Length: 146
Image (cartoon, rainbow, N blue to C red; front, side, top):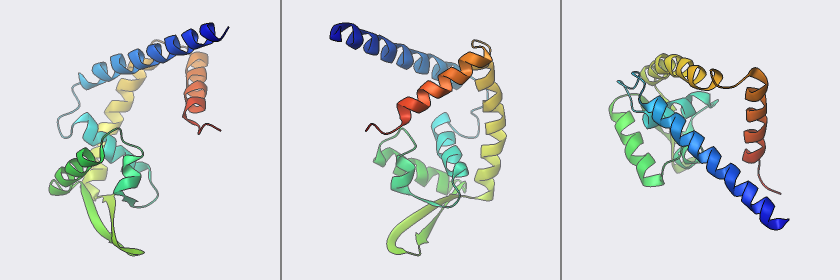
């Protein structure tokens, strides 16, 4: 029995990773990534979802990049005036990151096109019930394990 469960879990995991990889490649091929790369957009999107500025280590919890890669990307986005750094008023050593008006505008503009692309790629293949089930299952997998 254990071997069957292990096999099923590994098959499901492989299928999830394959679907993720396939969809990412299709999304990267979309003609919308002129102003920022898909990874830069991910940083802008993450910052746009937050109620206030984030510390860089908080950002790294939501973006699939290493800490050094995030630092370099933030440097580039700051240089392009899409993200701003500010001293953390509660910790003199800390730095907070937030979108600038330009960054927010770029995120909204690309986000609208990206949302249409996601809908085209995902909703065209799944029913509404399947979409709801996929969301339920992936949220369950995202919960902390007890």
